[in-house]
Length: 285
Image (cartoon, rainbow, N blue to C red; front, side, top):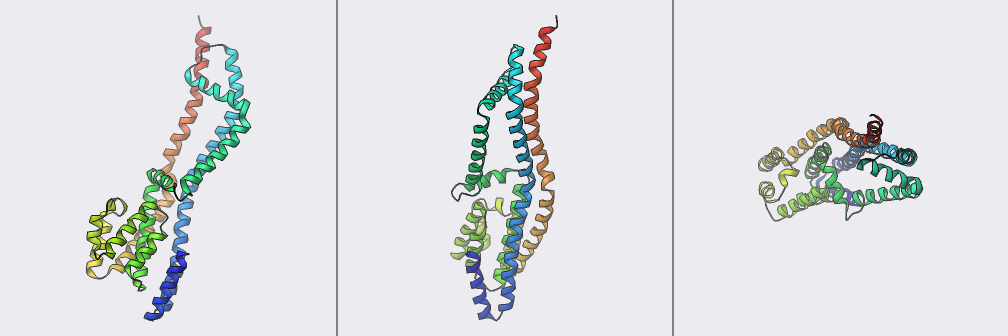
């Protein structure tokens, strides 16, 4: 809905200024950019989702089919079990009795958590905070958002749309709550007649969302009268950076994913090996 409102505004401005064809081209490019930004975020998340999903499937398979058998073996050994093994054995016994119910309940729970963290309008800010805490994701998010901000605001201003209306369009288009709030605060400051320099200095956490060098470029563009051109340059630069970051994201996240898988493997290995050592120690004179 918002896209069509902006498109109508651009068409109206284009008719009044005699730049209708240029503004229609801006509308097409704007829609294409939005689609590219969303595609980059989805593709960047495919690798970690695949690894974590496969780990969960393997973990459920082990818990459902192997742990119950290990529980029987350890029960027959009649040796003192370490706490870590007792946890594993208890979980195996539970899965042996309630495996189907537990798996179905787990799937429903995971779907519910994903919905609450990433799709529910009231709670998805929690999921965004979790994503922004991950190495690489925060960097990619900032680059994509600055690319969107620079390109869209620059093209909208260049097309003749008022700056307040342009900022409102970007604020409503952004999927990230932190940036959405920042754009709305910036809109209020600009609407009150403040400069970008004063607005950046007043808004809290502005440096965390927009790096200081970028703020200085915007301030210089505003003071020199070339704000639209500077913004489009920022958008182009950050779009190129996001392209590199999205390609390297799997390399950045790989150590974290390996640690998660490694912790699970070590837990199971210790739970299985420690009782065997206890049994060997009991056999040796």
